[in-house]
Amino acid sequence: MALQRLAKYRVEVKWAMIIIAATWVWAGMERLCGLHDEHIEQMRFYTNFFILPFVFLYMGALIDKRRSDYRGRIVFKQGFRTALVVTGLLTVLAPVSQYVTHTVISPHFFDHAVAYVVAQGVLPEERAREFFSLGNYIRQTMFSTPIFGLLVAVFAALIVPKIGRNTPKGHGN
Image 1 (cartoon, rainbow, N blue to C red):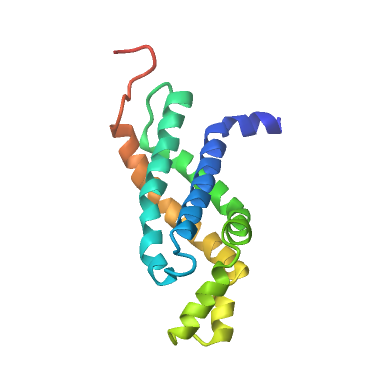
Image 2 (image 1 turned 60 degrees about the vertical axis):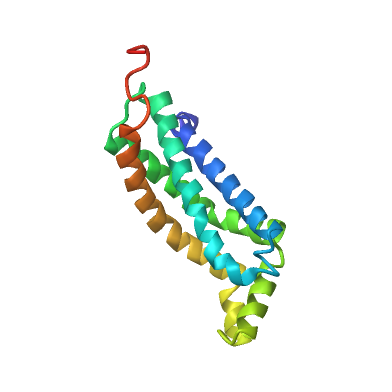
């Protein structure tokens, strides 16, 4: 019975995993470009560009759901529900995602970030270490993911029914 329920959400699970993998790839690119160490002062600017792939990935999830579960047609309510499930999965998996990002992909990010903000006089070292910590980043992600996911869910659910081929399979060209 549990497997049947999970099978119902196979598209959402697949796309949550794709989005998490994309965040790891993005973090890896940031690190390779020096945004986690020698160019850390620019990271805040460049990391915001991930919003574009993030939105496109959500739209991909809805297009996939439309194609696989809704016979080529999806309405706002169906798309919004799909995007909310993806958001819920991303929220639940946020601690794992942050752990991998900051222990495997960029294990020295927090040290570099602390050194930078302390050198700039933004925060004293103790406060900087509290802010730039795995626990704090996990808490921030657990809070921001549902909020940001909700906004992207609304946008994607409004757009996807209007784009691409939105006719039932086997009808039309």
